[in-house]
Length: 158
Image (cartoon, rainbow, N blue to C red; front, side, top):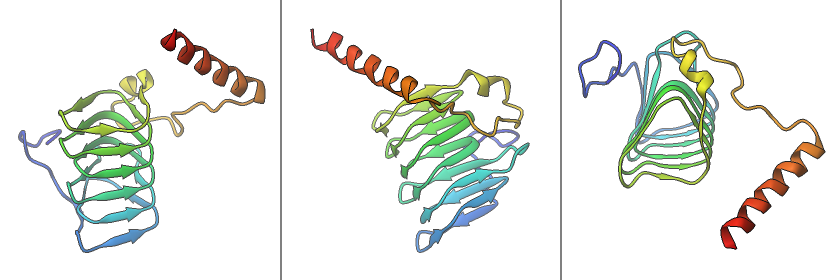
């Protein structure tokens, strides 16, 4: 589907079948196709042109870090997609999505935040920061963030 492949093609180097449940983190490069269930994180090797594809019957319970992803199944966890995320009609994500470019078809569901990460745009050659999320470091910063969310909710109601 991406790179040198013709449109609509997907190079599959690794297949997790629909009769397989894998527990643990998977580090991969190339194409990873998931029809089964993964209970762990999916982490693309740095500097690769990796893509993960989750079919309609596929399920991932963990974080996904990859340059590209195609989702048509269920993901319970955060996604960090540096280049392009494609969400098909049956896609369901319960978690936050950090992306550079996203394509969503009607019917795709996201139960979390969509966060455009401009840093990913400049890192589209496979190099990406190890951690795309800046944690709130102090209790005061956390309280201020919660208060601003409450204020935003009150403005919507008024």
